[in-house]
Length: 227
Image (cartoon, rainbow, N blue to C red):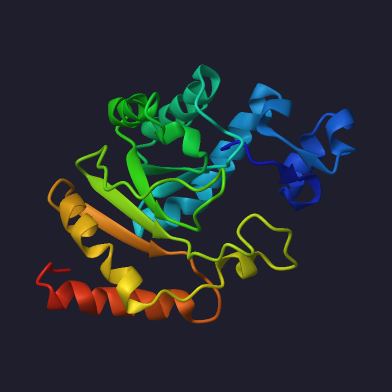
């Protein structure tokens, strides 16, 4: 749904059985490979699975995380707009995380944020390892007044784009107090523009994420930001 490939053997059985013969033999497939009716079925299956969360009041937002090979282009803008159109029909709230730094260079940054604003998509500000094509600047931007999101991936430069045996190794990073405190002014700036701010700790190795989340919550309360 966001340009990532899916392994055929991980698809739900009903989708695997409905694949054209030439696709069922592949190890991985992309959304563009699918007939329209199967692409619709993938979205429908995904949203149906989330319905209980929304019905119980525990749904935050759908994260549309676009990989680093999805850079700024008209085709990829249409990809984002198509996702928004599908979600809007069902009243789903969504946030967009971009992993290609070209979206934020001097030539394209304003257009990137305009794309999100006119589609009422929340921008995901990111803290991630520096120095990679997928490293985007930490920008406290708000593109929807309803929600803003900050996502902390850690700063493990050794594993960020390396081949790893476990995905969690990419996020094996425990922030120190100074690094977390750097974000407090940006969180305040975001909170002044959005009704809700979600801080998501994706440094999901051991207890690193929960530890840093609790530390950040304590800093925010001490600073009088409120929760």
